Length: 340
Image 1 (cartoon, helix red, strand yellow):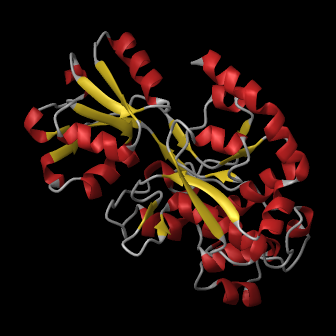
Image 2 (image 1 turned 180 degrees about the horizontal axis):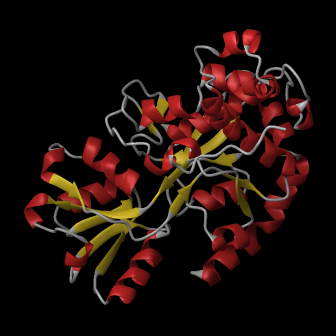
């Protein structure tokens, strides 16, 4: 695995560096749209609805960056990618940012020429099983056949966990979530393994009878998910990182898409002033509209809570609790770097 990552990084280094030198922000502006890599189909994260409109947490990250750059959240071209081809698409310059439920790991950070902008969803790898299988915990998986996605962190996690706990399993690698669901339902594997949010999406929208399936208690890994950009382009890295940070900061400050104009006009909070461009030169320092970059992202897309709840939270079919994705003040891990 390490050898393949190093080879891919070496092969793409020249292309990635050339793209970075051109300046991704300038390239995006000249093109007039943001090219954003997303999941082929993962409810709650990135999936087109019945009208063909892309929706999800990862989609909203793309929309927020487009709002910050263009003042228009709809200026995005979505590029559906599999686990196997997502990094190549970003390395080669086919896309400007990768927003595809991607895990932040040492090897990915150090070897493939990419950088994680920030974590926008904290997750962990779990297992989905039929209730009829009568599996009570992960310890009951001895001898099981486990379906998972190729090119993800899940295979190595599974191998490590299996060895550590002396619980042998047989792994079946598949290309896409749709194929994984079909294989699982056809009985090709005993359980499906993925990020718990992915499993919740499969259980909530990918099967006809959700009550016939259960996500086993416990997780075997940490899966900090978030958008990635190419290395050697600090300006673009800042644009993506601080746009996403602005959405978390907005939640902390109580700024929403509905009240952002009132907060801009009336709030006495100096941090709100800096966030929304009333004081300071935060946007200007990144090459963006000083008064509108964060304002547009919040106004058109929402703060982090709004994005979470409508896509995977209480207002969505998944109905996931905030858990680790709650603000730090509410016992979670979501924490905006100070705007000062």
